[in-house]
Image 1 (cartoon, rainbow, N blue to C red):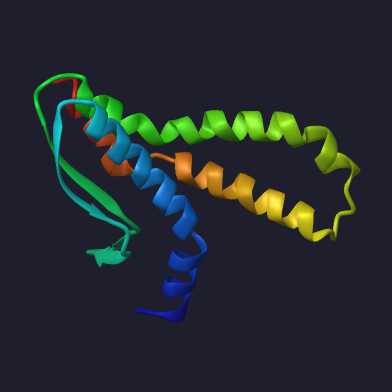
Image 2 (image 1 turned 180 degrees about the horizontal axis):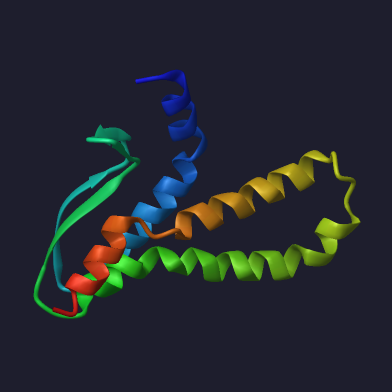
Length: 127
């Protein structure tokens, strides 16, 4: 694995943690048996998997809810941006505070992104 792979994994680790935590919490709240929680990136074929939560679900909507749980971070991002909108515009473009806020916004955006597996599990929950 390359330097680029490890850099990306480290850079996105906070997002990966938030993303998988959302899956984990919803699986915990719903009647699911959590089998594993993994935050270590790995290659699976041509894809890179940054983290995963494996759970056994009873048939029903709980699988679908767990699959879309990371979208909650987009709600958090919306309120973060609303709260910071005026402050972001007034700050110097090179300020460390601005860069940190933009990084946090990026992490929340990435944390809420659904993977292909999430989308498959969402629809599988309804079948």
